[in-house]
Length: 342
Ligand code: SF4
Ligand code: SF4
Image 1: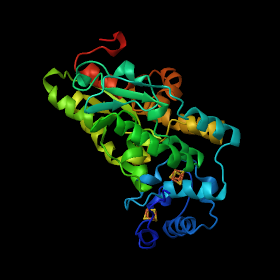
Image 2 (image 1 turned 90 degrees about the vertical axis):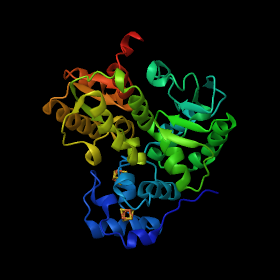
Image 3 (image 1 turned 135 degrees about the vertical axis):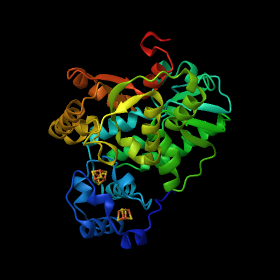
Image 4 (image 1 turned 120 degrees about the horizontal axis):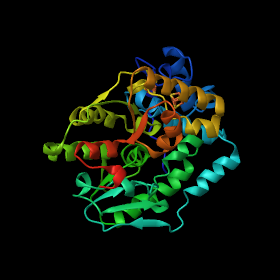
């Protein structure tokens, strides 16, 4: 059985209670924050178990690596507290069930993981990916299942993730570049937090892009555009990768506009809020987020996650902002034209 490694003593001696003090959806001071998280650990009731909207940010806010959001998720499940109607939860859990539907390219020692998202096949082209493609895989058999922490469900992850780890290991890969934050976090954060062993090296695609752009630096022509970055909830689970974003932007000549809702203070795309917590919360978060982009002169909105891109594209286009995935922007900077497929 996989149990969460959570150290109550780290919370008892915590100088900040940052996990819940910084939460954008609750108002708690330091002592209340520490008390609530300790209550949750000890299995007591806490309003946090009802009010948390699963933005994942406390995983980043806790600088002691104590996984407060994984704890909230585990205790919700222990107490039968659902975050979404049971039918919606069941529908989502069924979507990720391994059913023999997957695709594997010509696998070498290093491979790209697209998780559950075949659309990565359309953008992982050109010089940036010539050292690894067509070594890739995607499908339910390789789906990390981390999304179910939005639904207060760790048991499905504990049941499926070891099988996913074995599937990847059986491909014979030594290093996997994960194109989605949640997948990377499954093997870099959540799996190890629950005591799972990972028998391959996990690399986040931000690091991969950074290293490839260094190799191809003679091809870079600065794009000279202003852009806002839409940071996804799942990047909070691997927040150490966020440092690559401004460095990559510098390399390709993109001016990241200064925003209210950036870095630790980022707002999510709202899509999970709409399906789980209602239209009003999703609409409020999206409005504040997009106003913040336009108010600060963004020409582009850079997406890291296709889920965010799907949720926000029509709304940002209506405000005159162009959506682009980070990979496409990097390809543009080395003279490729992702829209024309070259
Ligand atoms: S979870 Fe982290 S930030 Fe929160 S009280 Fe414990 S140690 Fe502090
Ligand atoms: S996941 Fe987000 S909403 Fe929930 S407690 Fe953590 S910071 Fe607050």
